[in-house]
Image (tube, rainbow, N blue to C red; front, side, top):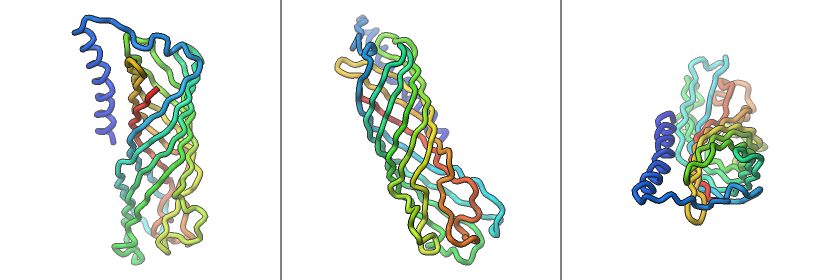
Length: 240
């Protein structure tokens, strides 16, 4: 995840640098969308990719050497944007959307209950993601404008199985339906002729424990786990 984070940061800076290079070659200094940032309220949408895994901490149990390995796959994001200008450099944004991704969990311990099939759990998740974000922008420089953002979000997990009476003993891995997250990120506004393109990268972190414990107190799946919460990287492309 660290390598992906560094690559995506570099990518965010290559785009505006290339745009400025071509502008200098053409010896023109034309500001696209010159009054865009003076609007009190504007709307847009975003598309993106994500990769989520879990932060896992362990607690004393009957399985002292238990570990859980997480292998995530890339997912996608799609949503809408409502942007309210609070100050020339500060905007409040509401970005409701859908997030889809999947992870594979490998449970490693010495329990006789875990055969090859029961030691693996496939988790496919679809979330309703409702973030409220503050965007802090620099002053505009020609047709680019860097920014940082920070906020909180509510996530509704449609695939949680929280209320299912079956647990891992019946092959059902359960997670909580309601989650609260915080997120931080960076990005760059690129003012094009007809619209503004805003690539951004952000880290998203759950504030609550998402795991629903199994019904049995000595479950080889859930009893060794203390903290279990999402952490992920989002790469979004906003069109406004």
